[in-house]
Length: 294
Image (cartoon, rainbow, N blue to C red; front, top):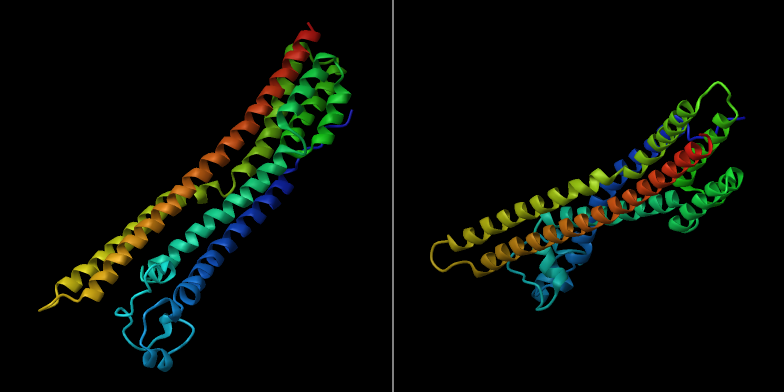
């Protein structure tokens, strides 16, 4: 009987290369988008209290292109875009990181969704167990073809091996069970690592987001204390800008890390669910063979 079709190492290597290329492109693109939004959306002159003569003499695209010292031009009351712009150069980096969390989370959810297959995973496992109980291996294989996905591929591989060892007279029961178990483990080793691709990036953003926000906090406080250190009356605009920068960076960094933690936990729990389903089905296959070939 022909061996079960498994994902070949060459195919897996190709998938890994594509995933690495995706990550390599997404990171700089997200940072670039963050910088673009920071300059042209948050930095729109209409977000700030700017004297009319100054506004006419400078660029209408962004406050970032003004020739004058812009720290005195405060945002309109309640204008959060202008407030975020006052957060300084750390803000677009944090915006890029936040966008990365969204992009990588969506990409992983799509991959995990494909690995789960077309139907309900719980229903699929119950059907496989039912077919195994009735000894209908071919129906179980057909159900795997219908379900598709990584979980179905691993189970199908085990079922095919079940059929192979069943007609192999050179193997005793114990050797057959070991062969089935080894086949399931090999198929799992080929399928499951692909699901964890790019999760390390999300996990890294948990720490990097907080630390980058903290860096922005420190730079903002440096500017705030610089405003206080001026001789004579403190520079209120510089003080307000510095405090604003500190708090905006803190909030953005915490928000990025919080979302990254939530999405990382959601994704890992979904992967654990797939792993458990494979283990459950694999145990059923082995137990069925052991009980019917005593």
